[in-house]
Structures are given as structure tokens and as C-alpha cells.
Image (cartoon, rainbow, N blue to C red):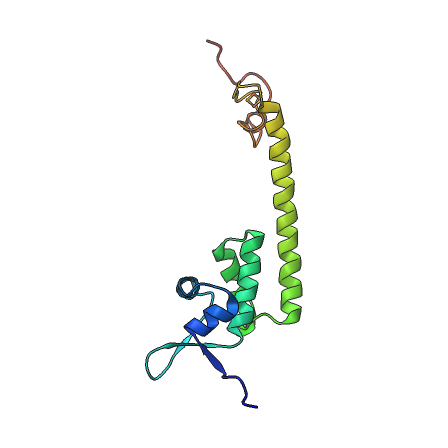
Length: 147
Ligand code: FES
């Protein structure tokens, strides 16, 4: 039986990864994946790019921006494709980020509950208008002129 080719063309990679060719070009432009050029000047991808694409797709589902994904992949030694151990570490750190976002969104949802039917949009009273509690940082006492 013949061994599979070492490198994949863009169409084959797209099909195997379940990713549009345009997405591959986009990821490459963003530095997330890399190709070499064949003698006919066609893009050729190492088979390991399939695993890299799987990581990229999962990271996107988690909601990570491309810049953060690129940073995580760049941090791997020699820009290698994530190993099983790399993936364990990356997925654990991304889970933590996801937990933090869930916490933030839950808090926002709960605060929004107080706004429903209110309509004040007051810097003083509405927690969503004064999310950082900036008035408290200005110290105690009145901060508003009455009109
Ligand atoms: S609009 Fe009144 S509390 Fe947010």
C-alpha cells in the first residue's frame, strides 16, 4: 500500500479539514498556518497543518479572537503543531477564559434584569451605566449637580 503524500494541496487540505479554501488563505495571511510553494508555485501544506486547523477551529468555537489563537500557537516551540500535551495545556487555559467570560456575562444578565422596565439609564443608579463604579472611585459625596 502506498504511503499518503507528505504534503497536501490547498483543495485537499480544505476538504479534509472541513474548512473553505478562502478560510485557509485567510488563516495563512494571519500567520496561523504556513505553506511552502511547489515547483509549479502552488501552495503545499504539511499534513500536521490538519491538526493545527482542528485547534484553530475549536479555539474559534470557544470564542477566542484570531490574535489570541495566533499568540498561543506562536508560543509553541519552533511554532510546532500542538502535541497532545500542548493541547491539554491550551484547552485548560481556554476553559479558564471561558469560565471568566461566563461569569462576566452572567453578571451582566443579572444587572440587566434590574434595567428591564426601569428606563432610568442613570449614571448614579444603573449598574450597567456605571459598570466600573467610577463614581465610587471619585470618593464619597455628591458628584452630580441637580437641575
Ligand atoms: S436603566 Fe435603570 S437601573 Fe438600569
